[in-house]
Length: 364
Ligand code: NAD
Ligand code: TYD
Image (cartoon, rainbow, N blue to C red; front, side):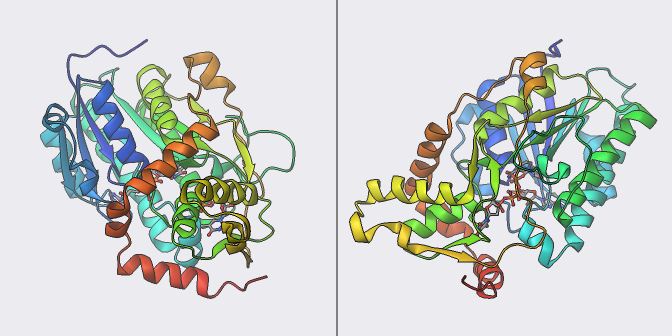
């Protein structure tokens, strides 16, 4: 059943990051009855300027507040002031390589932060008389399931078996969400999604890093043998799935979201080289493929992720609309047209991270 309310006041956490930005921009466009409060700490991954070009109509239904999901006092006063109809929780530390170099903040933000947000939501939900229409939607990842062999898929009943501090922290946060539903009845939902790509993705992640390095003729660092497989999903498809689940999903349920687009990392790098070379006009001996460098692998590197998205398709009628080809073309277009955005997010901190992560990887 679709929740029927005249105006929905929705709290989105982490809305200045990659998926949150795409989600808010898309939701404001297609849900004219939503008012969105974007709560974001503005870590290195958050950029409030992603909303500078909203239409006047959308701006009226959007507000930004800088704050920390780990801060209970701040959360309690925000919930008191706003009385939210729902929470969509994206805020997290999200980069596996960073979680290997510095796991503490992953536990703080992803576990403690989620716990504090659940507490504030619960207090406010109880005060409001436990409205049935309230939803706490937790955005999680397929990485909680660990690594697949060459066959099989992750379903909603696959046992959790996380490999990295990042995925362990997301797994713990999922368990807290489930515990708040089972113990306190807080109406919550979890979606576990495969790797996203698209506009506004911070260029420490694989696809934007490769696109920009190709454009700038820098080395293309491929971890290990390059044969690790991810199931890629265009971010707008993910956003549409989230809206479906938020509005029509059943509290207590988990939904897996995937793009049905499994590729080895090395094949993606080849594809990006060829697509960009075509656009830039690099041919023959000049091919960007010569920039590829196989480098020391990531420790605990999961070999394969692949989602079985039958449940969300059968129960809620969601399917991805973008193919890998259309999604990748849109992504390349966006990075080529938004050089200013790229330069603005590549701060001193970013350059330091790149140096830190790649200088110590040996070329194989
Ligand atoms: P991101 O790193 O781009 O953005 C995270 C945002 O959270 C940033 O704006 C940051 O400022 C904010 N944030 C961090 N700590 C905070 C805190 N303590 N309080 C408030 N805000 C804080 O991440 P993303 O790629 O947009 O991922 C969003 C969510 O989706 C995450 O929960 C991630 O685990 C999940 N997810 C991501 C992918 C993917 O491929 N990117 C796939 C599946 C699931
Ligand atoms: P990433 O974007 O970090 O996502 P995740 O680790 O959450 O799946 O990486 C995607 C894949 O690309 C993963 O198998 C690691 C690999 N990778 C590289 O080979 N080189 C790189 O420089 C990066 C950042 C990732």
